[in-house]
Image 1 (tube, rainbow, N blue to C red):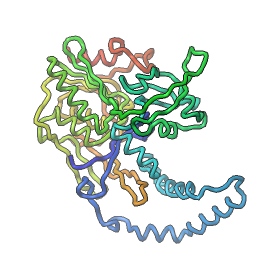
Image 2: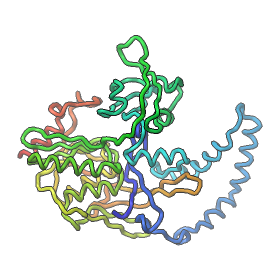
Image 3: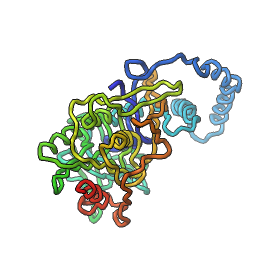
Image 4: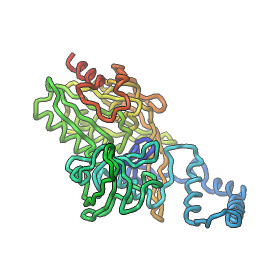
Length: 407
């Protein structure tokens, strides 16, 4: 593939990071992004002159002087400087175009790789601000230590998590493999907090889960499209084929996206070599095509599960298979993110993630703001909504996909 582009939603954090999307990188031809004369469309000098004419520097100095004199606490000059850069980028009003500090950029890169050193669990922050373990990975440090889904992280190395946001808590839990972290958790039903010392380990996030259902129907759940996901997906398909798979359900519900290179690699295991998978078009009308590079295809009926949180890379995957008639989409209308971001690292270690193009399905459809329409519309049963884990036999959307394949 010609480079890595971010095709995810707005980012959040997992323990490795529950990321709403994926990384893009590259600011040169080698990485798939054509550099152009910055004066080619709107002159950078003109923009700079416009800002100078507005006397923004004088205004900033006045604001700093007033805050320095009146504000009750000491000013943090570094924080203010980073705030100015972030505000400049945020002024575009594009939630997908973001400024990252050096620390945030390191965390961002680590998140999208699908590998890190830590405890091996997804975590979230609930409405009350609690840091909650969601899913300890089997045989990971958290799982071996006895941490359960729903456990609340109360302390990290003696420091209360009460005033921590998710990003800060995750950064304190992670560290070099082989080092230890002392944590205290609250578990519902227990009268006392549980204290434990957990040794960090190198973690490869299990972004793909699979099993063989009845009637030789394979089932693959894809959490997100990280660097590790492509091989995990291919291994799952290969194993299911070896077991005699006669049909396949690919579950992309609540999958916020990921690396474009990853989704194209996964599609290459299904779509014949040389076929167009997706193409991008930038502000200059330049097209960048991505074609299947696989030597194998998958000759079984496929159903792809989608919902309103299936976004971007998920829509690239589902849209290509739908366009070629290689899969039926089951579920509800997808999110509708048909734009692509690229990462531009800056010299001081910070970076900008900017929207650089729109993407189109093989048939030339841009689904941005619209989403993909399922071939078989099925709402999740009302009593199942909000449940963290739903047994496959009780999941009416999965069962509808299976029934469609059996027909």
